Image (cartoon, rainbow over all chains, first blue to last red; front, side):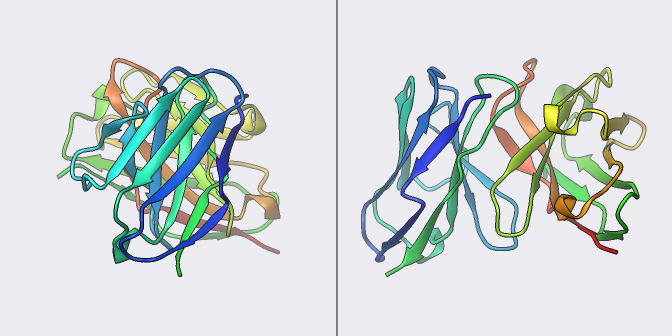
Amino acid sequence: DIQMTQSPSSLSASVGDRVIITCRASQSISNYLNWYQQKPGKAPNLLIFAASSLQSGVPSRFSGSGSGTDFTLTISSLQPEDFATYYCQESYSTPPTFGQGTKLEIK
Amino acid sequence: QVQLVQSGAEVKKPGASVKVSCKASGYTFTSYFMHWVRQAPGQGLEWMGIINPSGGSTSYAQEFQGRVTMTRDTSTNSVYMELSSLRSEDTAVYYCARDRSTGTTLDAFDVWGQGTMVTVSS
């Protein structure tokens, strides 16, 4: 199975900050990398697919980049509703695996 | 609108089985594969398996082989996930999630059910 490692595991930031979350795969996965946001008590919500494509309805302050083994999710200007946990997920092979999550908290 | 609606919370004893349902609406049910993902309390996301609602073929994660069965009913646009020989470690929220693409077995998960809490306790 492919191992996905996110960093940091938690992050404190302020409204208006630019935030970058990284995800590393244990082997090359081309651009088969997706990002999700999950708020407490809710199902995950797809933000970015294929490393850099913005899911319909997702604000443009979210962006993704990378290929191969190293990927980033960037939030350009944090809004109050962005405080949540973020997961990366590879869809290169079965079983698809998730990172351990990055909890984004208010500073 | 596209949505997935899951069955309600369950409490089961160790050794029992649980069957969770997921009813799809707002799109052509047989055109998109469906995944099941679970999340233990305070933990991350774990993929359990996938079902093709068109033909009913399935693929399960190694960890659940022999204990999980995924089925579908095209007359009601529903998929089901049954997990047997339950143990306390199976206490989790179980989600169904639609695969984003038609014609492929693995892509991003673009629509999720609201989740079903399954508690295993004696």
